[in-house]
Amino acid sequence: MSEPLVFDPRSPQCKEPYGAVPCGQEIVFRCHPLASERFTHCAIVLNLEFYQSERKVELSFSGYEGDRACFSVSIPAPPEPELIWYHFCFWRDDGSGCILDKQGYRWKVQPEPWQLTVYRENHTPAWFGRGLVYQIFPDRFCRLSIPDTAGMIGNRWVHENWYDIPEWRPDEHGIVQNRDFFGGSLAGVASKLDYLAEMGVSVLYFCPIFEAASNHRYDTADYGKIDPMLGTEEEFRALCQSARERGIRVVLDGVFNHTGSRSLYFNQDGWYPTLGAAQSQESPYYGWFSFHPWPNSYDSWWGIDTLPAVREDHPGYTNYIIEHEDSIVRRWLRAGASGWRLDVADELPDAFIEKLRTAVEETSPDALLLGEVWEDASSKIAYSRRRKYLLGRELHGVMNYPFRSALLTYLLGGGAEDFRESMEALRENYPRDAFYSAMNFLGTHDTPRILTLLGANCTPESKDDRAAYRLSPEERSKGLSLVRLAVLILLSFPGAPMIYYGDEVAMEGFEDPLNRGGYNWDHGDQTLRDWFSRLGCLRRDLAPLHRGDLRWLHASGPLLAFAREFEGESVLTLVNASPACQCLDLPWGAPLRDLLSGQPFVPAEGRLLLELPPYGGLLLGPES
Image (spheres, rainbow, N blue to C red):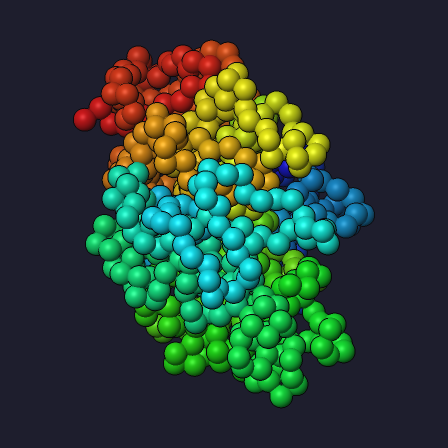
């Protein structure tokens, strides 16, 4: 803003406490206009989003400090969760004056207000975010044998060669069917649990594992059945148990906005012996879907007719997924899962998510509920409605796409100050627990591979060329250097760091399904994996990295430095995202060492002077 000395919501001299506040919390606002402005009155204007009301509260004048007039007021936050938009009015005894908003002093304009999030206390399960979250696309992680597809839904075929490029070409009707499988299984994952634990993995997040016609399984056919190519319910239970013995939890993907057209519930092609909604209006599932008219026209996810949308407000559907004693949400938690990630959370009504949260907590009090949200989730508008994801009754946290966007922009030549600003906006808007447990990541099954993004000099125009594209030695070298920096920031920044399977061994690929190849067990980059592993284990084992507060030390141009601090112990992350050497001068008194190389660093006269090599980074901790 242009008047930070008058009011800065991130300064304790202007607003206490920092950022979002719990319901009922007293909030102190202070403004410091120049005395020469001759303002004799100041008021804060509060607009409450959900109550749809406006309040105007005058601040008290308490005198002068130097050349500044001092106004202050203490206001209790509402007793219920709320979004408050606020700005200030200043005026003189003669009636002249102005407003103060995010743009500074302004006259006769629509204000651009600050945001204040008011939330119900909402503590994220303590196990989430300590180590690495590892996302697995189940068909592509580990195959123990080539499966037989006989009797399986979906006209499947299996690649003999694990390292084939996934089939991306449309069929004769212009549709990508996603019927090519590679044969990864739950037993395959179980066989690699020690391998994952060595990397510091503490959570396995699975893309959908329930029976479905496609290889991605976001077109659920039967929520109550593990896809037979992946294994059985008994194998799922055994996997969860073996993972727990290694300190690893399992989180499942809940696709509850839509099913598959080839599903037990819709049954458009008659695969299942029972009546689906597309076959008969007498089907018990008919009311789950919106037809106009039945049977060939119906609501679907983004107009894709193989993904018929469900009515989340239908009592039968809500009972089946959430409320029944043996509902889908409850059943799989009892089978060993420790939480759910909600696919396309924007498509799910607030009331549905709130009921789901209640069922999760009733079934397993320390279970996690996470949502897929691509923007700032504290103020997201979806389908013309302001959402309440993080206000205490719905999600514990969300996938942090803003983190990924800001980090990529920085590493590809943007300023570190812009990365800091993006993250501070989230830290200011999110409840503390939601910020410190946001799922941060570099890539997912929905995004190109991080190495390809950071290494490729260009993006070919045709998908045929993108499918065939491989980084040149020069591109790969630069990409690997930037990936190392990205991982250093990811694993030392507040949040729950997530790794997409295969990124740690330098897999390449543009958009899906090119980013969904078989895990490179034979020729993966082990040097990069060692980097991931060292950082993953440090993240898991060092309290400042998984519990510490955030303090910015420097953010300008290519240089980024921040500290994580917990109970008097600090760990510093220092990054140079430039192809040239850069010098960094920080105020620091205690000796430090690089936790990755062991190199000592001794301050001189209270200053830490460092020279960071091109694309270089350090993780500094106490000398002992």
